[in-house]
Length: 361
Image 1 (cartoon, rainbow, N blue to C red):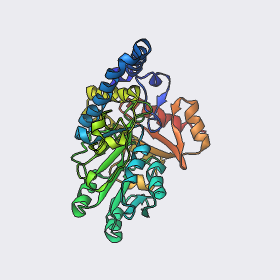
Image 2: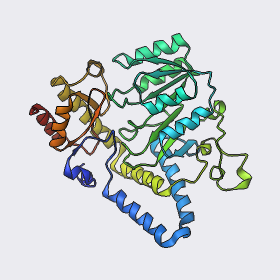
Image 3: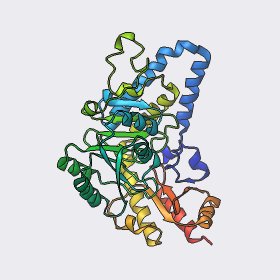
Image 4: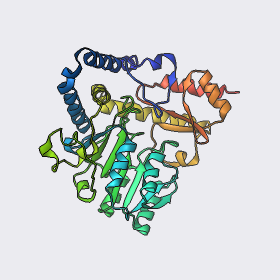
């Protein structure tokens, strides 16, 4: 990974464990973006057809990378926008199960659209609790982040498959923004009916791009009325035959942003999804052990067998400032300090962080 790490300038100036806020941008992506804008600067409207090709290729790249049929990929500027459009087409009488303190952009839209909501806490027995509540409350929709933004607790994907088998009509909606890009994931083989993400975190694609992935049957129970000329591929004859996923793309999309997403997905593919997953799993296991030994993790995280690459350690303003002063880029979230390790981080960096914490005043 050493060669890969040199691609990211931010890694040269600090220990960057702030991917949960914003993923590092590579030199190669910057070069592509500069060339793209230069083409538009010099050629103007001559780039029209090329820009459409970039968007089309981005859709294909997302589908290939995450194991989703191309026609079931919707390109959106961010997860929040995609989810709101999706909920507009759902029956508002459906009962929804949400997790306490889940990401606001996942929870708030259900509240705003007037769904009946049931909530349950996030703890070490999360899966057992969800199973019980789904059955007891006759839940129609389970909506949750695959990885929790504050604690880093990750839902057991195999549990979701078992839950789906027990409740075939349960609609499972996921926010994968803090998950996708960290592991080798196949949407078609998962329990999710709908999974969306923004691309600026673990996918390292910068702001302004995201996507929604759908299973085939979703179009049967979601009536999306959003429409625009772009959704019809700028063809008047397509007005009444717009595919479900294209309803999420009523207007023109920024080829710079979605070209960046395509570029980053190809970049990650060259590194190897399995290789990235192995590195992230290794970092997660070692970080959990190190933080646990220092008594910095919540009991809920300690007691769970599996965890993501995001950790929220116990620490106040003084410890946070100490980390920042020692060139550790992290963030305050909730009552602690959040760090997120991606494939471009190293064991040496983790060891350095531990030593910095031990030296804290």
